[in-house]
Image (cartoon, rainbow, N blue to C red; front, side):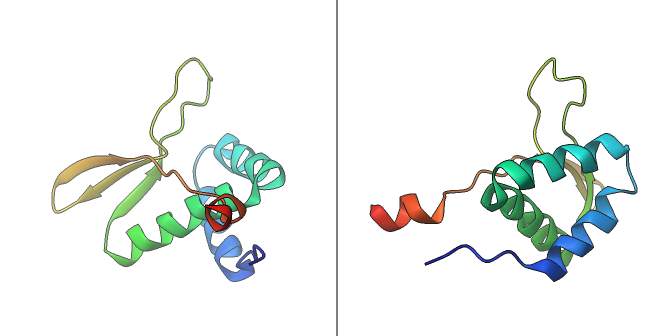
Length: 95
């Protein structure tokens, strides 16, 4: 099975992430170039959260001093964080 990026989702995700500090968009673009599956996993999870009525903001630490979850989320007055971790298609297929 070959990885096929969802260009419609990419456009929506970029439109969303560019509303915040532009460094978030640049980092995601860099991730997409170096590991498109991982970047698309992040965008897909963002879409699922949005579809569930969750307010989502990028949460990546932009100064690089420490790791942080990918998203800061709010729903029904509650705050929570989401770290997206994916498994590459070729690795899963081999197993």
